Length: 316
Image (tube, rainbow, N blue to C red; front, side):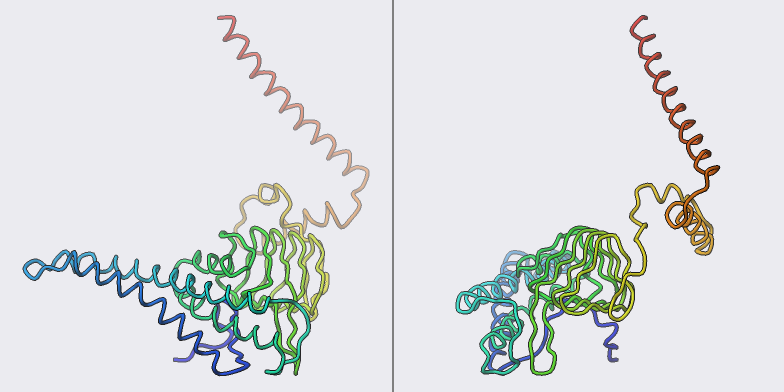
């Protein structure tokens, strides 16, 4: 059964080929990465196979397959990285706007780099744990943290810089390169700390998303768009919607436990409107000061009692 395009997730490795002969690099990484697996299986069979008692051979076989898969990923990364280093020495990757034509050197080498990276990213993404994806990104030049959640979206594989605690939603696309007509546009994309990207959002090359910002689901940025810190952006193209107060310290304690989403929305809007959207009345300001003084007094009394307890302990 075919998988809808909207549900296909993983690293964004374009399949565009300037020349078909570049496929030889794809077959090279597959062939080279399988050789260590054959050697590892031969060693396993040599030491554990026994015609009289084959139970040990079959008992540890599932663990062997698990180890072989991880070995396949790392050997694919290793051999692809060697090829990529050689290609980058011949022609260094660079940002800019290039002609989408085999005669254009930058277009040819962009296509070649994608072909080399395709196999390691494919096998890493099939692994049930997402950390192998992040290792691939880091090895091939994408600046990211191992704890970032990039597994659910399409993320390009070069000229992208992620901060920490970044979440990419289901089916979202983060690009550093895009083909428009006869042009290939390559721009560095920067996504800073604590950014959340909604499902099926599209981030175009050159986008810079500031800290603690949110790009809402199905929203689209344009090339070289700048998104400010602490804002929620919505629409096509993405525009400011409102301040992002969800990262406010202590917000969870203020909201407390709620029964359903409607109650959560009511409590949040009440806090949001009273604290940020409207100027509180004089009476409300006095009440807040009074509550604040009471809290500070309780805290002071508690500290004083603790010190008295400590002094009594020393006197004894």
